[in-house]
Length: 131
Image (cartoon, rainbow, N blue to C red; front, side, top):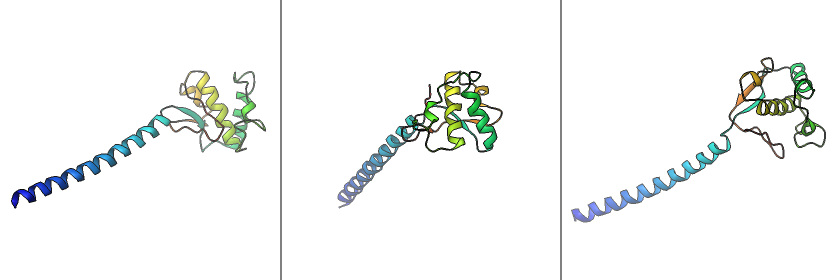
């Protein structure tokens, strides 16, 4: 009878182990997918930036001086026009500038209005690149 109890306990332990292993494995896979999705670095407008600063950033980035001239995605009908906010439009052009010109802290500063993030800010058809 003791042997049966020991086997029953072993069977219960084995079933418990299999359940925990399956759940843990599923969670690890899910977390790995999120980590892979967020395994880049992007530059976006920080929460301290004023509307005037954001507009100045858009104007500069979209000018010849800024070196990033393709602001079509933030124009009406563009993939990144919606949501139509200064913060979203500035974040898009800041990231394009940052991604295309070297990934340094200086290239995401924008007078103290930019910040680097590790969560992909892409949404809908608006894709923020990360090289």
